Length: 289
Ligand code: C2E
Ligand code: MG
Ligand code: MG
Ligand code: MG
Image (cartoon, rainbow, N blue to C red; front, side, top):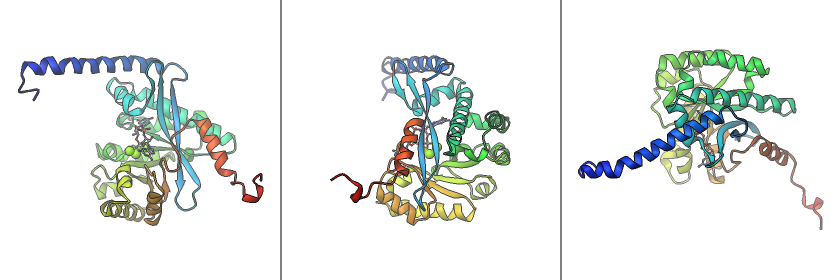
């Protein structure tokens, strides 16, 4: 319609585009500042739960930005800005280092917890990602078993020669690798076999449909079989209901993550959550009458 309207295309569409472009420019300026200041950017942590025994197996770090005027912004807003304006490697390095610092803090509290960090395509393309990561681990004295990376399936399947090498290098330094949003890309099975990953993470779109769709159940079942046959573990993301949990457990999923268990939360809230969870609920006899 905009095209047919000719002139109207210019009048109607252009102001919208420039408002958006202006906003993106403002966000990139603010993000640049946020990267040099303390306290605006923050990692929230979402628990990963063992399907077998309900224990906490690790957390995924998800970045939040407390913008001074706009309030809390999610990664869907600022990651694309960071990618577009060349800030993603700086932001990504900050995220990895924060995750290391937090993992060291938890370890030193006697409550070690593995932290998974999401990688952008640009980070994966850095020739020295493994080297830089090894340096960070050494700098903070962190065991690589306490850090892992998540790379989306679509990113992992691009530039496959390079990705194979980077995964191999990361594997050599002991970093676990998950293929995020699995099922939404186009993995070739032979490539998947070559790729040195440790885990497939089933995309939440399949989890959402599990209770009502035999197709979604069939897909999850196939992914679990494939993963296990290749020696990979499987985690499902976006688990919101008891029904989904039951189906995923019955289908042999190893780990579960989602609002059903907990939302992503700041480190201190996660510590409280963990504490409350490990304190057994009082039995009736212990309750005041
Ligand atoms: P993801 O890695 O697939 O993370 C899962 C997203 O689903 C997160 O959204 C999480 O908050 C949300 N989620 C978790 N459980 C549930 C649930 O039960 N139901 C629903 N509906 N959603 C759930 P978030 O935090 O907005 O992150 C979105 C995406 O942004 C992430 O997807 C990840 O790809 C990316 N991202 C987040 N932090 C970073 C980062 O530090 N660096 C990079 N490069 N990307 C990041
Ligand atoms: Mg992820
Ligand atoms: Mg995901
Ligand atoms: Mg996802």
